Length: 258
Length: 267
Image (cartoon, rainbow over all chains, first blue to last red; front, side, top):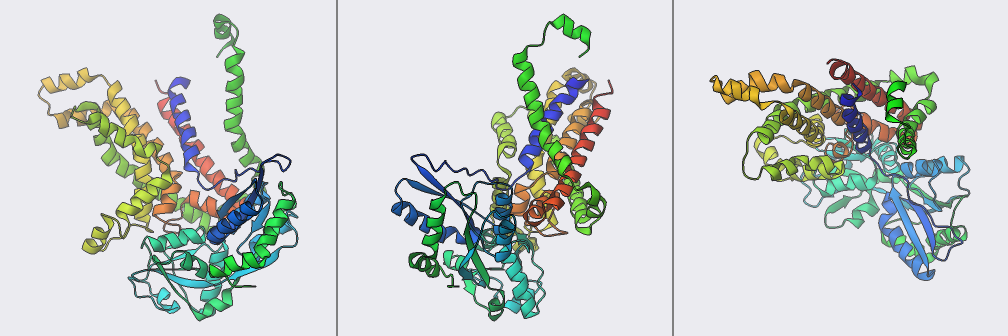
């Protein structure tokens, strides 16, 4: 009797395996004592371009060191750190997500290194003719927002509240890059994304600044983690981000100085 | 598994028993972890929260509609693969199984490129009928059907190959058309395979995550199914994610139990 059930038990076990998704925190750091050193940086999705560049600068200045990045929504990264993911540095897109990590005494004294502002991102041909924030409240305009749980979504809620607008999005995306992709593909008419993301996908996405964005500016904190496997290297990377050189890279990408 | 069979077969080889037990622990332990960490004291109110019920209802409805679509399209497809020989049949069979091995996210991207607003078929759908599929409940159903249909096709085809074709031949020699043979002889014969395939297909659709979040987006009430709700809850409220996972686990167990009662205990 067991024989006929067995294949289905196996099949279901396989199924439930591929059914679950999402990035897992599997980035491991090599021990700092070894010859080749590794630094693992968990950074907000909106920092993808700038931090990759700074990582290369860091590797050039520290021969033999590799910098590994885990980019994602700050909320996801914070949870991964709390669950014990081996990270050295955490750069978040909001103080609230950083607080998750400092509350667990996993990081100390975060420093604000940049600020970021929202813009309306529209596809290059702007099919819905969006030109200010109130156009997003039009039910005919398809809007993508970040989920409220992640920093860009929290900022969007704040900005829309400041404008007194009620926007019903068609989707609430998991991080700002996913939201931006929906604009790039032309699946939505508009999205609220960071100014820096608009600049990063110049040509495919057009940015429209709006005054209420000033009421929802995100501070980006960075901190070394108390259990950082790479030790001093983590501190040196944070120093690079806070240095003039780091500031130049970040402001060129559209971030504002704190 | 009685002691008499064990005596007859001699001692159990430890080379098989040790990895077998390790495998069992590996599979069962995470589920046990879910049960241990579950916030049992607040389980009731958490389950009754409107957004949980909403996600559950949406999941069940979408998975059921997707299964229905898979049955309507998949059973004939399985019949075609098992009973009709045509050039390129092996290639077609291979193509049918592609969504089975394809990462669901890739499936979602592919669906977006074809059925999205600017997709090959999607832009025509929009201009001709005003239909857009991404970010709609219909989009969820399509994503789930795309990922789950191969499971149904494979199990129905297997049942067809296992069925004794002499009954069909006998019906045909008595003057029945191929359609009548299929309806009156083949289908009743392979019914257990169809039901098992449909249950498997439904379970796969219920757990679908990657293609759904990519193609249909994530919005409460229209596209946020249980797996998406679990993923989002994990961001801020791990306990809520555990509760939602428990619901999915319970549903899976119920499916397994129902399969057993119907298809295993009966001769």
